[in-house]
Image (cartoon, rainbow, N blue to C red; front, side, top):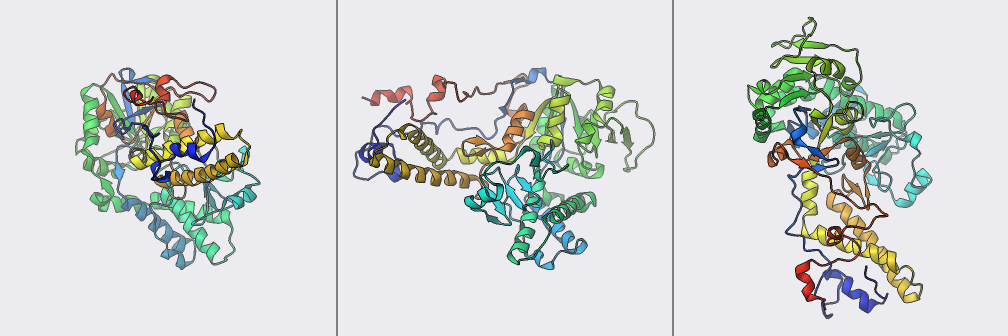
Length: 504
């Protein structure tokens, strides 16, 4: 670890290029690591737990945002349809029709305070309506920066049994968060007295009705090329697994005709031949817990049959059912099964905790965030931010006026740079995965319930059938980083070997 005296002349050498004086002699080495040639691969698979694909015999999939991805038009459709339902069925002011969907407003994983009408990422950033709440108001609102456990959402992120926080975890929730904020904004701007709990319930019901009343399904089926992103790699993944002799199944909450139409578009008319079992309208997560619901067969016309199910046949579509009956009829067990889904709670949590399946999370936002992290601007900003943090930690022992003045300026600059790094991803809430030094609540759940995670299923094409995923060993706060970790991390940079010759 390096230490330096706290005076402006010597501190100058640690400033990034835009902070240095042009007439100063530049040092031989600059703090930014030479990692531009070793950037993260956005098509990689990342692991939370060690897992070998050679141990996996059965692959399972969710449908929405796992096998199929949707275009930007879908969230606009959901937002507009739910907004119109609020006006026409819940008697909300017609003026809210002026609000349009903003795809850059919200991110997944946010909590919504049902009683205080705010979205937050715990608890550093809070938006009330469409406006960011100043820090001092946040502290006053919550009597600090702590939210009691009893106010938090339940196991599945829902607000129930007195919990006032609802967590939005799936991609379909982005229009819901935006609509909640828009209606809140309208009421606040027009000084209209309203009950936040009623607003939350009405928006929730309107979003639900867009799905359950078939509004979304009919729109997608009527213009499938507009709403579904054609991905030939989905078929390539399924074909690869089939050629390796793997069993495959599909468990989705979506209806039969909708899934059939979409799979024919992205995979082909023979898509059912690739799957050993297909289950629709499964009602996850209840599917994983409720033992009472039997399977029902769906015939070619979409009619539900009444005969008892003694086996799950390949090429046939089944509705409802439960996991316990599924395991009994298939004989598939535990660690031989790898299931992919985009919803950490509804798709993955129960399978990990109760049934011992291996799980893979599909996180489409991952690709965008990695591309941002690979930019030179981001790397330089983060390197200098980490350096500033280290300088503050080690120089705070100096109490003389000059040192205190420099420390004050560093704190101010660090605050500005933290805001800058947040804005790289989202101007309101920052990254889906990180809030400053700490992982987000979303990432904590992801780390707990997903063995591996990736941007899309196509990432599997980059790995062999017997590939083993190893999680990176990250040093704990009380552990020393390994030599390789210190090359690119820590307060000051340890140069790569080929550069050490330049240091005298």
